[in-house]
Image (tube, rainbow, N blue to C red; front, side, top):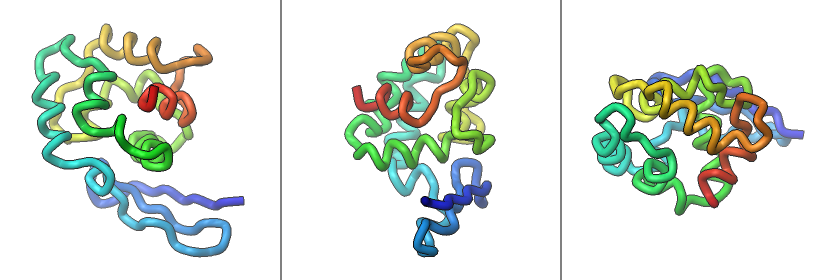
Length: 138
């Protein structure tokens, strides 16, 4: 059994992980830019600056997430899970872009609903790690 302790790190998109089941330290102060290119993130944010221009499929392609391993996609999920609940809830999706770049715009209600409906496979109103991985890698 693994014991993962996620805590908010020094920056908005950074978290720390403490110990695995063997007591070995995992990545400390992990951030999105440890997995994704900062330049790709900035360019993707610019592509969806206008309200109602966000497409999660296009965004994931632009940031290079669709080419990452399943493990890396899962790591990104945990970094995006703002309240460490194990899910990304609809209320968190509004601030999705800000998880990548503080100061980015919030998603519109329409964008948030489209994102949720396209990724919430079991219609429980939240995105689990398996749903996120399936959405990104499909």
